[in-house]
Image (cartoon, rainbow, N blue to C red; front, side):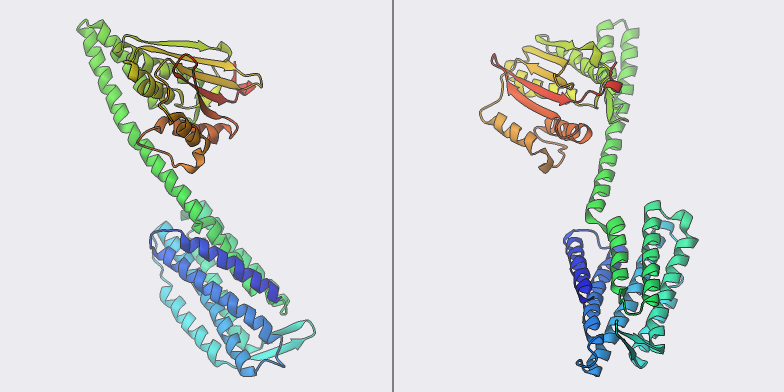
Length: 435
């Protein structure tokens, strides 16, 4: 039995290390859970000591055994009280309803702790093991029942207003503790109260307080805000440009009207990112609008396409070609005065996949640059998503391909024998997605 208490203490020690090492804002919920973790560790330590002392009544002095036992049961009452406080704060944050029973819960805690340290303790000795018994035990178990009822009532009253994940976490924790209390009541020698405390704590940690989950939620919120922010200016811009285009057409300036039309098309397609995956034809339409504008701006720049028509409806990650082509222009053809060719091809591979090539006739990689690019693409997972700086496009393209298509797919670069570089995008082809 003692081995179980040691194992539970080690598990909670590890959880506490993970939790306290993760930075987060100091909120009432965070502070309550922090105190809860510390008290749980103390409770488990006392639990282990008590399991030993209560089963060695003949060798451990009665005064020492009683003192440890009172501390153990007092910490158990405090743990369940902190669970109630955590749930009450969580529900208050979710619903905005104040905690009316705070004073009652604190008063009951004081009374329970006072009774715990004043009432006499008695023990029952059995061949299976020893345990504390008598009227004294009504105090801690009565307190546990009282706080569990408060938690259940708080959950039931606010059930519809609480988020699904949170009410499931609370409900699961309460069911676990009730089940452990029932088992402990039916089998007094099992001494498994520590298991219930640990399982309750884990249910909250894994579902609500896990640092990785919180970081993921924060990242998702941040990316959502960046996405919404990115929508505002492009939508405003392409609507304004369309107005200017119509005016240019009314004034008889067809060339300007055509260019503005392609710019409008580019912005219209670039902000249409409501799906992670799009048809290759849609991705190419965006790229063609972009390249027509660039070729008009730089008359000696050419763009060629060689696309297998059977691949037009194959789903690819959204917005992966334009950043690669733009990278070829800025880091390859710019050094040659934008004189040269960009060739985009898409063909099936021998193993049933698809390879998209973006080949340019630019100046190629600077000395040592290819090695650094290769290393960045190889260790893409270690680099955070970039929002500014060099190599933004290719790193983000690599991350999205790996995430959406699988680790066996992705982006790589080779140098052309005649000059320039070629970007290789290896992607899957699913038969139900192709024409």
